[in-house]
Every structure is written in structure tokens, then in C-alpha cells.
Length: 113
Length: 123
Image (tube, rainbow over all chains, first blue to last red):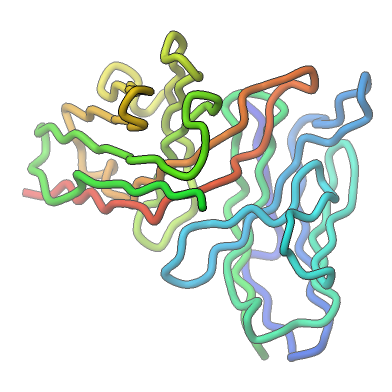
């Protein structure tokens, strides 16, 4: 099974500042035939179910603010929030869907400093 | 509007059984794979099981294999998870989650999540 490892476990950032969350997969999740990375990012606000933010490592879902961006390839990925808003307080999870089971990272808790 | 509404959670004793349901609306249910993902209290997300569009193929996490059974009724737009031989470490919120059926590019991400139903396994 592919193991997803996120860092840091928690993060405190001031409003308006940049937040960066990393995700590393134990295997390459870039499919060479279509050049797609099978990596998603989810946001889970307190008391809410997770919500898909980004798929294919860098494609924002409809309605997701453009301050959220995803980058990376193969085994190393990053979720960046360019200017933190109060609404962004949440736990963020990465997930690979390259292989079954579609494993999740352990989550990164993002708070306001 | 896509809606997934889970039900059936509650308190059950170790060794007991429970059946979870998920009622889907607002999309063509029969076109989607559906998953159960659980989240123990204060912990992260763990994939549990998946069923394909017509129910002919199912997959389970090793931790629940032989104890949980996933099924679907496309005519009623519902998904079920029958859980038996429940253990304390099955305690979690269980989410019903859709996944577009695989295409030329293979698997797709999990797109819509229900609000979840809490299962507590305790004496």
C-alpha cells in the first residue's frame, strides 16, 4: 500500500500570511502515460465533513478560492494558501488515488497565530 | 444539489452488529462508485470499503475484511454497510463518499461527502 506522509502535523499562521503544507508519497503517483499526478487535497473544517479542494495535484475544484494552490509531482506535493483567511482554519488531508486503497495522509491542522 | 445522508449509527456492544445506510440524491447515483470512509474521534481519515456502479465489485480495508459488507440498491439510490463482530477500534464517524467511476485515466478523487454517522462500540 502507498503511505502518505504530511508535514507539519500542525501549523499556526497569521492572517494574511502564507501557509504551506507538504505531502510525500511512498511511491511515485505520477502516471507517465497521461502525465497526471493522482493526488487530491481535502479541507475539513471543525465539525464538518471533508471537502475536495484540489485534484490531480493542482486543479482547483469549482468555487475554491484562488488563494489555494497545489503543486508538486511524483512523490512530493505542496498545498499553499497564499493569504490566510479566518475561514481557512481546518485540517487538511492529502490523498493518493493512483492505487487502491486510496490512502490519506494523517492530516495537518491549520490555525491562526 | 448533491446530497448524501447517512443513518444507522449508534451505540453497540463489542461483538454486535449494525447496518449503516446512505441515501443519495441530486445526481445519477448509478454512475458513481461509492465508498465508506471512517474517522475515529480526534483522528484522521481511513478508507473502509468501496463498491462499483452496479454492485458487482466490492473492496475492503484489511481491518474490516470478513466483518463488513457493502451493498447498494440503485433503484432506491441507497448504499449500505453491514457491520458485524464490531470492536472498540471500529468506533468512528462513518462517511459515505462518491467517486466518479474510473475512465481512461483510471481512478478519480473522492468528490462528495455526506455529513457522517457516528458509530460507538462500547460495553
